Image (cartoon, rainbow, N blue to C red; front, side):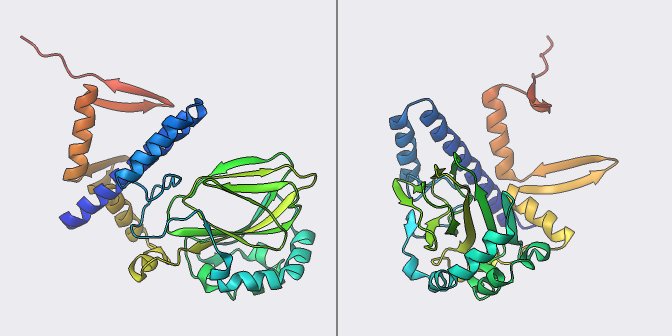
Length: 298
């Protein structure tokens, strides 16, 4: 593995850790009733280039993409197709789906045991290469019971998410950043998956919604290719794992796994350990056990 690849993997992993920790800090301040401190953390993250928008919370960042909570559905040709076919889609989904969540498409493949029971819906979705040729994307149908309250955000700013309310939309809404949308059955909503969002359903009946993941339209061809079908062989998965985490060498012998970090990751670990004044750390269940440096002898 080339040195520049290891350094790139280390940097990418460090940036992921920074975004994850900042997101946790923002949520902690908000949970503690300190919204101003939460907002200050978010603004600082934007100033330092961690995110492009103070309401974003993703870990994997692609520079240069437009950051807006909600997108105009008129900018996507297939929203018209879904809304035109909605009466048939609603009739089929309402009669066939009775579980909390059903996955129709995942990892670049149709889930045949499910999608075969929804031929009309699948036929419409198969006309949308923006969804069915995008490997990380999924197509799901979710059923939310009255009283459901969720807060979410996606892992990357390279993905948009489309919601098509199927039934039971009355009394429900979604907040994306500081914008709130009340659901309308048969009308699509497209949002940036990297933004913090809150979903509430106060209706009298279950809320059924079709959810599609889409590639961000501003993604350049090079990044788009990276999101298409990923590593398939065991060797490719190992190499991808090492690159993403800045690992220089990995070995497995006699039941033991040995990892050797690259130079940038090694320096980061050294700085953390020196700041904590420990020689090592290991987990015992959920508890961390800190190993103290050996005492010097006279």
